[in-house]
Image (cartoon, rainbow, N blue to C red; front, side, top):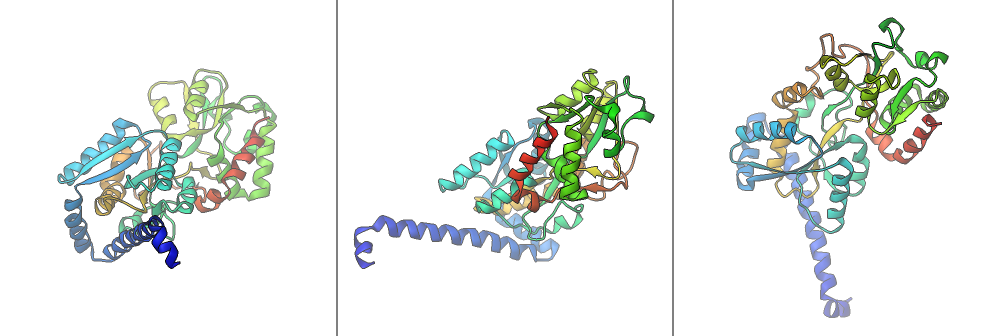
Length: 355
C-alpha cells in the first residue's frame, strides 16, 4: 500500500475526488432535507438567500419550447435574481445524455422532467436525489413516492376516441369488454408504445388477467402506429373508427377545433400515462435555485399554468369538474417503482397487442 502511495499518486487523487463527490452529494441532499423541515417562511427565506448566490438553475426539459417558456418567464418574474438555462430534446436523448454525463463525472443539470417510469433507471445510476418538498403534500395519489424522489407535475389521461361520423355515441365502446366484441375487429387503433396503457391494465386486473386482455385485444387485429397523436389524426381522417389510448387533452383540442371526433372516459377506470415528474440531480450545481423552481412548478400557480396548457395537473384541487374533465371517475396511475424494475418485461408484453 505504501509502495502504491509513492508510485500511484493518480490512484490516491482519484479516490479523494470520488469521496469528495460523495460528500458533496450527501451534503446537498442533507442540506435540503434540513431546510425542508423549517417553518414555511423560514424555509423560503433560506432557499432565496442561498439561491441568490447560485444565480442560475439548469433544466433539461423534453418539452414544447413555447409551453416551457411560459413557465420559465413566470418563474424568473417571481425570482428576478435567477436565470433558467434550458436544454431541450427528446426524452430518451436527454436521459441518455444525463447517464453519459454521470459516467464521465460531469454534473451539469439541476433538474430534469421525465416520465416516472424512468425513475428506476435514474435511481439505480445514482443520478437523482430525494427532495421531500412540502408542496408535494397537495398532489394527487400516484404523483409522489414515500422516499421523496418522485414529484409529479402532470400526466395524461387515456381515453377512447372515435370518429363521430362513423360511430354513433350510443354505440361507442366504453369498456374492455366492449372493445373485445367481434364488430370492432380490425377497427381499433393504438400507439405502438403501449407500455403505459398496459401497465395500468395489469395494475388494475392483475398480471394474468392483464396478459389475457392483451392477447384478446391482439386478436382484434389492432391498427398499430407510432405516436398517439398520429393515431388520433388517423381516426379523425376516417382511417379507422376508434382509438383506445388517446390523450385526453388532444381529444379535447381536436373536438374544439372542429374535427369529426368525440371521446369517452373508459370504464371502470381511466388509465393514466406515466406521470411526468421533476427529478433533482444527485449533484446539483445550484441546489437551492433548483428547489425553488421545483416548488414553483408544484405550486398552485405553476399547476394552474399547466392546466391552461390542457395538461392534467398534479395538484389534486385542479381539473376535477366540467364536461371535459375526469371528475370523480376512478383513475389509475401505473406504479413507477414496480414497472421501472419490470420495464423490459412490460415492453415484451406489449408485443401481445401486435399480431
